[in-house]
Image (cartoon, rainbow over all chains, first blue to last red; front, top):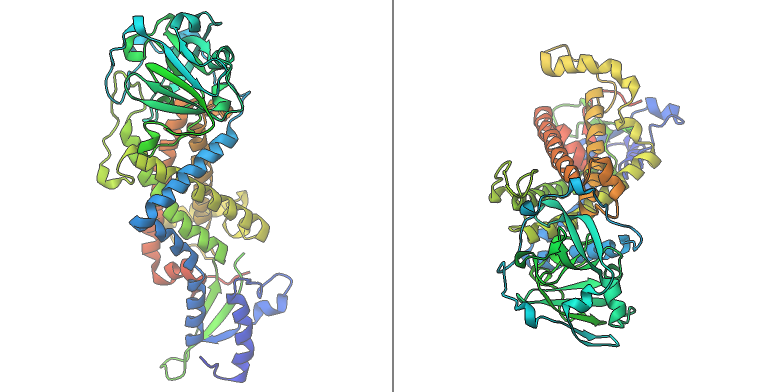
Length: 274
Length: 234
């Protein structure tokens, strides 16, 4: 739109500066300009409004989340970024809070969560943990071999992805101790486990070596019950509940993650460190 | 601080040759943050309520006493895993927007327009009287009246708290001191939920005021220019 006269033209250029976002015409140091209100025509004003409105178009990029074909890859990226950040935030020396015996949730109020069955029917007499991968001593390990390692007991919080939390008393051997026993290559990146109920999980090496990460065979100073994962489960106070697999049957130290985890494959976070 | 004041002349051929005034009230970064944040907040609240549906209680798991059954149709994500994906994606957008907004306000000096300060206190009561008890309308001196400043300052603080309580829930071990400040993981979850309702309360009041104040006011959050402002910018 053409300005209506020369005078307006002059002022028009000033207001264009203003519209460019750097609105400094009326400024304390520019006392004179304060009292001179630039005049613009109605059409010119509408144009200025439109131009400013157009500058908001980047916001429309968020609309990509409304397009089904783009939504899934975008959310996958968001989840991956969160997992990457979780890995960066993890500190090996940071211990999960521990609690007094009086703060522990009573055993009968410690929930039992599983994806399939409470009791996959493990035959204890025949049970061994099969160890494979980047280890010097692969093979079958009995429960008594694991129990011969130093025992650690801890009262720690168990947090479920659903939102509830309880404080439990767990006992077992540090996974790091067991890793020494089997001669695991700790430069390998991952530990994967398989379970009697076909559940499977994987851990990053830093978490596997964390002093509170246990191969757990006791809860509340008693041997694990079947519902809680007998004879051996993971107890990892620095991870969300679903990472702490029950009824372990296999453990593998690996550089390549061929299987991530049961819930991860449904779309949950892999790292999920607390 | 709001910037340019201009006069708008009636175009040739229009009946009136009266001039109107307009003021550039909302700088572009503020408008960008406002709209990105409204989308992020919508997604975070919707997905947060879906996450809440997985355990709609703040008590024990055994026995479980549900606080309320939020309808699935008013939640985002469809299931817990889906909602977590939305939440873990948009929490970054929300936090980044908040940090950018804070940085812009500080470095541009624009915070003087919106930050509620003790000197605004004397003007609070007349404004409350006007809004809630049919009192006379106080003179409009600047872009935001004291109650607006109070609301926008408070809701930013709530936004910061929503991020901090969220961080305590997401990382109660790495940020155990943060969870401790909130009374532990369990309470951090309570605060996170309560802060969401406080923000929703703001949004409700905000939308009511937007409707009451009409079109020119609404357009100003899109284009930055507020036509016929009731005040003369300093």
